Length: 94
Ligand SMILES: [Zn+2]
Image (cartoon, rainbow, N blue to C red; front, side):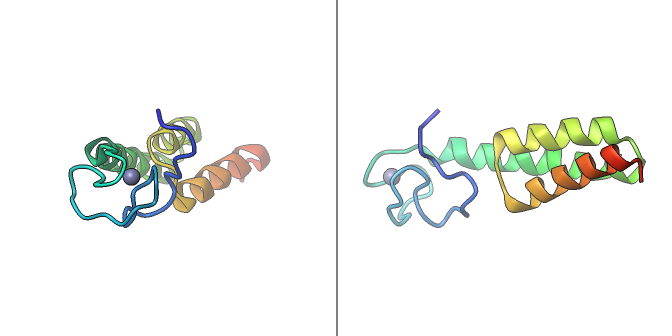
């Protein structure tokens, strides 16, 4: 895993060196492979949707587990908010 990679920013710049994206395959400047990042993004979205579904059914433990998984693959402000929301719900049993 690359250090200093900001996975929370949208993919309009190279997550590794911030160069403008010219090809969807890899960064023209540093050679960073975007396929992996895009794969992580879509995996994260899948887990995010599942987390929401479990939350809807009141299964907080699974919702938290899946949102953590989602966060692991791709960190976004949305998933952090969701995770905090679930944690608060668990904490106060609301
Ligand atoms: Zn780059």
